[in-house]
Image (cartoon, rainbow, N blue to C red):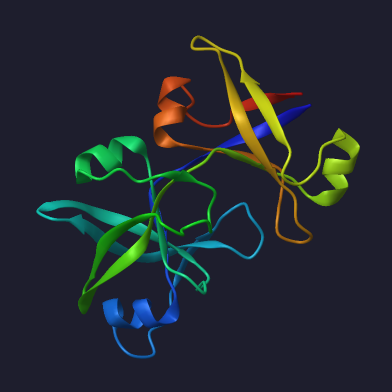
Length: 189
């Protein structure tokens, strides 16, 4: 079964309190464009992230607002920041790395929330049933081409009205496989 590949660049998910510390009281995100997963969007707003004297600017915010703030980066970004961000699924931020967020109106240090997003496969429950896979299952995804590769340890994420078919990898993984856009992979079990 072929699945579209999407490259997830560094980005932040913010809770309302942190958004207001960074951008001002009662601030709301502005949508730049919708992204593939239902009800999510790339915001027009950016922040910087800082660890000690090391900084990465232009980190896109992805909306809508969440209950917990988290920042998803690549391993290369973690090296740039001098941190050992753990590889985790989005939302799994317990005991992850601290990071300082900088916005136009202020900054906030979060004690946990910096992660390298673990590769995963979004799929609706109906599509998952057709593919004979289920939420939480581990699969592999093969990518052909000049830098053919098999991505192992891919976690299936299948939740009602939340997941649309897409294989998500970070920029380091995409570069390793020479993925530049519009590629697809094949699920292996």
